[in-house]
Length: 466
Image 1: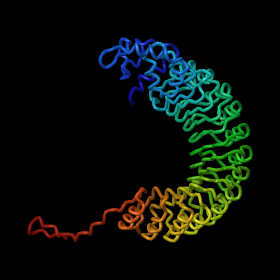
Image 2: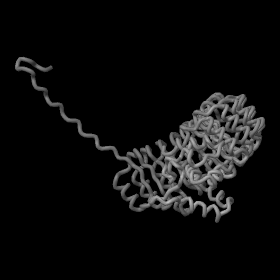
Image 3: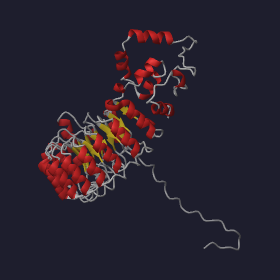
């Protein structure tokens, strides 16, 4: 990636003010030559103009301008002159640092120097993918940056419970933490983190395979202000974890349990019972869930806007009909591979869910033209809110569905892959009536007829091929 190594060297040197001659970015296109003097294209010095700017603008204004620059631009400005170098290192403009673009080059020394330079100014830090970082660097960071509010440690795979211990001790203002794929963190780390970071509102523990009921219970009982809980692919998340969340974290608005294969309907009942303001929930690929989970959400979560249940093959019309009647603010429904749903579910959506914007029905093979027509008529009748419809691999829909969908002028994307009953002329007609919409389709080439076998020639006249 361009300039990433130069910027990283610059960050590593944040604890000392460098002059123009030694600056590591003097080999970029920022206009600074190796001797430290800024030059125009015709060879004239820019020092005079820079001096004029420094005299005319107070440093507070320059700092304000610098605060709008990205990391690369800021480091380049630091090469212009000593005054700008000092201003570029001012901690007040380093409140939000995103090192994701430079993840391959970021080592512990970079984080330690940023921490010492920024100190109490730093509030948001993104270290996603910085796999070279160890607990020692995060300990230094936590010690100096005690006002941190948002911290992303996703895919920092070397971090352990020691990082959680340091954050617990020094980061009482932490509100959002992402430790997605930090697989060495265990229940003990999550428990000690919850002891000190009681103001957590958002946490992502996805793919942390060593976190289980003990850690979740500690988190739920101490961090009762949680609004967003994400735990994709955590094999040890079970019903008792959801009981702890449901009983203690009643302000939850978003829950993602994608691929937590061991949770059952009882766990969803525990969660939904007290979480009345829940708006977003993902239960995709939780194969043990049935219509009972949908009924529980319908009874307790009327504000639900997003529901993802792709791959929940035991759910059917009964559960979705109950949900649609109760949760009339639904905007996004992902029912991919819910093979038991039929046109009755689409009729319920058309009748009750007037705010639906995106609907995924891929691989729902019982859906036919009747359901799609009802959906289209409902969307058209309410002025059109439906923007995305995915009906790929639905063999029972035909050109009649496309004729109905052509009346839904709000549609922006329609997926029609492998719909065997749909023809090319119908697709062309749909695209003509909805020219702004992206229609995704695929028609496999016709299978060539099997050629009659031709008799093979004999090798010699005395041979017979049997």
